[in-house]
Image (cartoon, rainbow, N blue to C red; front, side, top):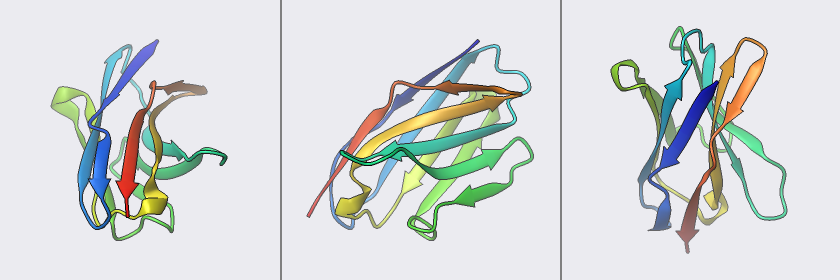
Length: 115
């Protein structure tokens, strides 16, 4: 089992920046990839950014150039640096860990961008 705990969400003005974190614990060996997803009210959950165990990254088109996913292996923590935030970035952001065929989710952290 892998436990994921997000932190760092909050309210920010459009154009501002925010960093959210995901701390992993438990059986964290062989995690293949860590991702951030988000779900806005009335919308489906969507992938925002992914980083693999090899360090490869992938981003949704809507956040490319503005968001950066990174990791600190020593702290078993992953981050999402969000710059130039827009009101449409408002959502609950979820951390996801892929371990083999298993997927683990955090409880989510809310990010609200005011116009």
